[in-house]
Image (spheres, rainbow, N blue to C red):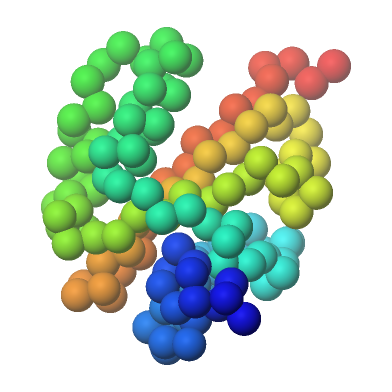
Length: 136
């Protein structure tokens, strides 16, 4: 099928593409052990640029009142991941039926990104969650 040829990870006929997808599913399952993410499909992820990831991450924090420069955070991530050698993915959480996250008490939204460095065999996960201050 054509859908196997065009995924954010590359063609699923290639083992390297399938491995990256499996890594991300494994990370989600480890982060949220009470949930099963094996039903996710490659198209539930979006391949993005670093500038897009950073812009969304930083702008979300700024819109929530974080006024400090976020450069220190990216310096720390870069020291471990070598950002210039990475590929970036965003989990598309807009389909609420697929994601348990909308069932978390007080949760308004979530954003999840993955930074993959093939050379270092590392994946970093970044996420931002928005919650109501008062659940009543």
